[in-house]
Image (cartoon, rainbow, N blue to C red):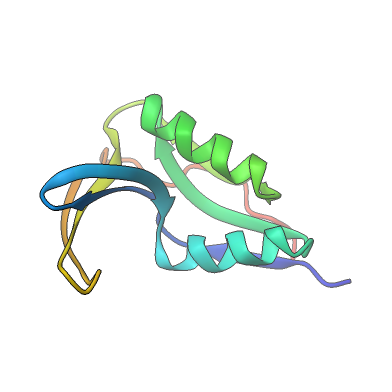
Length: 114
């Protein structure tokens, strides 16, 4: 079986319903696709980064629980893992606000052999 390698951003989405926090889930466009493949048993690696904080722990734990390798995920010591606030309307469409505090030096990870 072939392996899948993705590159992208991780983010913790805090979802609001009726202007109240409802749930929080890790996300990101590439991340979401790779999670689906990992759940299907496809060998998946993700090149990304998270902060060395509790949000980063939540994201990495979610990756492991869903069979997504964390080998190529950098934990930057400065800055924080990004979060988004997703406000759902009556039709469950989301309006996002993003909070990001990235360090100057980023993505310091070994790259997988292709």
